[in-house]
Image 1 (tube, one colour):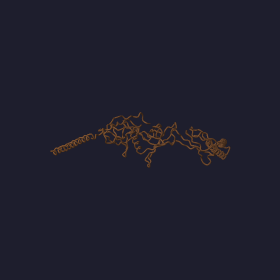
Image 2 (image 1 turned 90 degrees about the horizontal axis):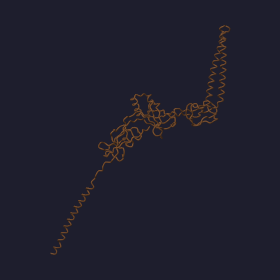
Image 3 (image 1 turned 180 degrees about the vertical axis):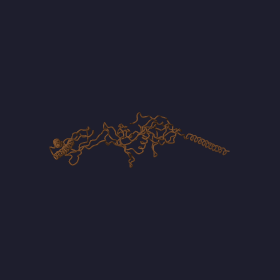
Amino acid sequence: MTCANLARPAHHNGAWRQIGRALAAVATVAVLAGCEDKNTFVAPPPSKVDVATPIQRPVTRYVEATGNTAPIKSVDLVARVQGFLQSIDYTDGTFVKQGTQLFTIEPETYKLKLDQAQAAEAGAQASLKQAEADFKRQVDLVQRQAVSQATLDTSTSTRDNAQANLQQAQANTRIAELNYSYTKVSAPFDGIVSAHLVSIGELVGVSSPTQLATIVAMDPIWVNFTVNEQDVLRIRAEAQRRGLTSADLKQFPIQVGLQTETGYPHEGHLDYVAPTLNQSTGTLAVRGLVANDKRVLLPGYFVRVRVPFDQDKNALLVPDTALGSDQGGRYLLVANKDNVVEQRKVQIGAADNGLRMIEGGLKPDDRVVIAGLLRVIPGQKIDPQLTKIEQPQASAK
């Protein structure tokens, strides 16, 4: 009886252990089920991205190029007569007006030669006057048969020789006048004179003309640049559409700006277009004439040039920062009707004060991503926040 009573509690203990294990298993399953519900992935909401429709307004199309300035006149001042340099009558690097005396080359010798030639001319005039008077007397005597015809022939020959001597004397006087005028070297036009290349007292013009200095015209000034073949075709097509001739093309306005200047503050017009393209470069040489009364442009400057040739009345513009680029070219990110981002290949035009003209690939009602491009992926859905593109107050000149 005692042994039977001791075995019964052990049996009850095993049963309780089995029940505890079952309850623990049920609790574990419940806990795991609860954890599985909490770790279910929930997609984040679409990113808020600023989008805007392109600005639509009239824009002028330009041909843009880089050119260099050149003087319309540049002359080396030389000594055209031989002699010692007597004086330098200007300050190096100054602006002078046409006719200003710059150098004097020993004028006394040439003044004496001029006086000598003028005296010889006066003597020749006196001889001719006497010969003509004698000729008239001989003509009258021959008519009265007072002298022979031979005497008249001699008088005629003397008169003709006197006329020839006078013409030679007049030519010698003119040569002497020119040589005397060459002793004073003057400015042939308005311009800036370089530093003198000879010193006072130096013998010049000995065997060949001696360069004394250089004078350069500054106003107006030429701007030389080239236009590529594609732009040439566009300009010619626009000119043909508008009925313009080649002479009209030369009157196209041009705008010029230095590398350090904002915009294009200097204005002028075309004055030369090469008749043929350069086959090695595929470009056409063009030259403009620009006013330079303040002498801001110096010959040899590299400048930015643009030539307006057309106007688009309904051009589309977006911020330049909205454009991306890859191996395929330039593109914009556009939100479609389902608010999904699309990568749109576009053809770009000229820049206008922070905006970029879009020539093709974009429609007026397209919503363009204008901010946060690095956070947007093509094919991704976004929450577009429609904004407006800020327009510049004035176009760059």
